[in-house]
Length: 357
Image 1 (cartoon, rainbow, N blue to C red):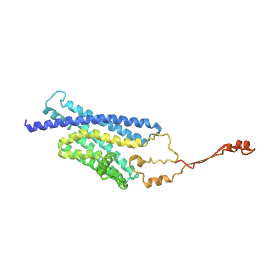
Image 2 (image 1 turned 90 degrees about the horizontal axis):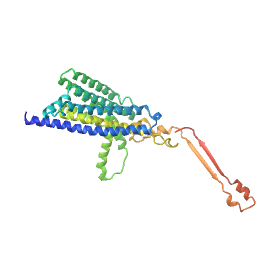
Image 3 (image 1 turned 90 degrees about the vertical axis):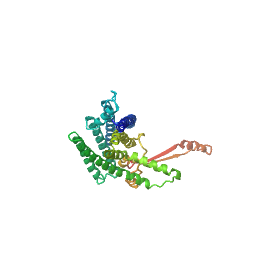
Image 4 (image 1 turned 180 degrees about the vertical axis):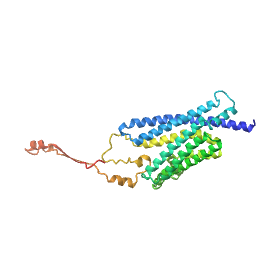
């Protein structure tokens, strides 16, 4: 065996072990994050106040959590099956890792998890675009068509991989990854456009030294809010499937828990923003918890939103209090006792409640 082959096998094993360590750390943090979010959702909202949408999103987040943990378990099983615990040499270990990540039951299980995560993430992005664009079916027509083709090509590649040679399976897998990139990129653009356009209309004074920092913060915040990590992961998978098998293997380790974490954070922003800590809002407080604001809490309230709520009836509560103190007039005349007897507090309350805000 040549020195270059030994170096290649060593780099492959090191990459697998390093990426597995990163995946383990991400899953460990994800366990704590998911537990906190579920606890906050269950403790801060009463059962009758939870909407079906919130329950569905929390359920999807739980599915993403289970898929991420299963992915970690499969990666650990692949290392065990490759002979890591038996003390095999580097060449055997590298060959085993490559083989078990290929067209085997464990390899197909990892691919199935990625397909399911991509489907859930893209469906969530399309739903957000549908809400943000005022329930427009025309906006999400192409993303829905692409999502259907994505699911069909993904499961077709799984079926072909079990019956066809590696070259044909790899071609179908590349086609699926390309469709997934286009679907996710289109949905992400539809979600991010209102975010950037709404911020562009607001002019703020910022010192010159903070401009670069502000741009970086806006980019990072928009990536998290729009869940653009879905698109980044899809691009990495697609590019590495054409140019780098090692890069594709690294993406398989790192991105499943990362995508699940970002998905859970986005779901938490939506579900927890609708939870009200106070029992009842004030009568004169306007409730801007419409579906568009809940889908993306960072979007500002527009003129259209205010006009929608301005047509609602307003509850009016008028209280008039009058106090007469005649005690100081007791020494002014013989009628002081009668005057002091009439010196009572009078309070008039006028309530008008034409409707509930």
